[in-house]
Image (cartoon, rainbow, N blue to C red; front, top):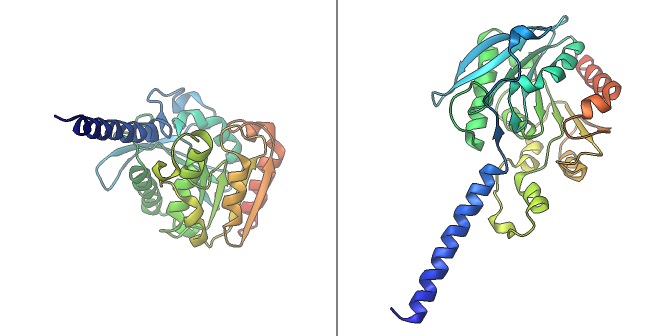
Length: 268
């Protein structure tokens, strides 16, 4: 084997390894599921009703339904990329103060849900959750999507496909590629994953939109929230909060709660 052939073989090998590394990095950097529940429904003041949902590709999802005191609407809560639904109970308690029901689902691979997370899989999970609400006689015009962080991308995708009354997007980014440019500047842009592209999809969402994002967000830069907001059509509103990515709803409690309460009240 000539030296030239050896060099070519080596370069091909290096290229394959590099692409495999990038693909692994894409998944490892996006999904951080935790299987073990932090608490069980019966341990919490507003005990959730536990539900199992089947997806189109035969995964079984764990979901909790919590009843509000004035349930004109149901918030379909699509959470972020880490933990599981049990880690959101404190925030759910806040959202229940709006009077709405809250329905939260664990994506595949999270908590007690089966399967392994992927972009396509999360979209199927959101679809299954939406269809479950329809089955229990909660129509689309009574559903408000609530997308938290990565869940913002899932909620936006769902809003382009199904009828809903409104959407609340908290701590979300414009696209995974935009996030990649910030956190992995050493990777050529052409190799960054072209997934969770909320920037393109948000133009198709014509329902009322409430964006909530902390100006201090240490995980999803506020600039990406602004980019997403600017590409959205009216009606829309952006609420600028303070605090960390996962603590903004506590650090800016009054603004956070009042903004959501007024947004929901304005839908009637």
